[in-house]
Image (cartoon, rainbow, N blue to C red; front, top):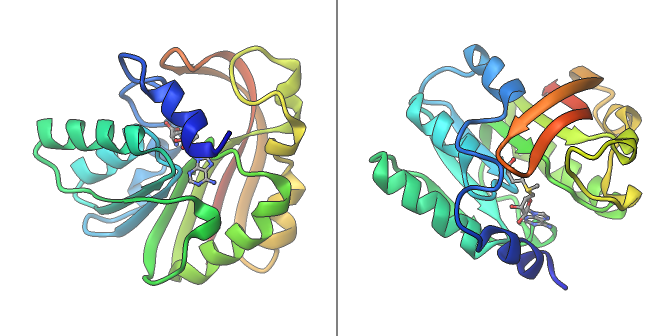
Length: 198
Ligand SMILES: C[S@@+](CC[C@H](N)C(=O)[O-])C[C@H]1O[C@@H](n2cnc3c(N)ncnc32)[C@H](O)[C@@H]1O
């Protein structure tokens, strides 16, 4: 089953799987990103982070493999009178064409063998001093029932990020936290929070 089929089946249910509010870690760093920043949200799903960032005056583009996720994002953007660019594509096929001030990803479950290429493209797409911010499930999330894949190949370690972004300023931390993100993420979880500056 492709990522598009998998995520379309999840997002075709009523409501928003991860709720309407942005990821709390990403929202907590908003002061780093001035109004007018050009932001790219990767694997943005139904759009909770994109809506939050556009409401705060950022110029947002969102990429996701799921056309159903993207149409739900558009529906919310229309309701809120916000303009958000969208690209429906698999990130493995994404070609870097533009530069961004901020790249955002929350719970983007990419396979281990896909990540080096993705991280390369993220670095290439950032303007000098630009930020990559994200929250991901740790491999330790296999011990929790609050959400996320049960395939270790889709989970992350601190080293996955540190190895690639060693030369950038970085804050990469594994944390146990309580998630309250729609029906999809509820309860105690082990996550990796990443804030990297090019
Ligand atoms: C767990 S959901 C998270 C959605 C959103 N970031 C959020 O936190 O609400 C994972 C998202 O990543 C997208 N995704 C996974 N693999 C992808 C890929 N290879 N290319 C593009 N999107 C992908 C899925 O379509 C889905 O929307």
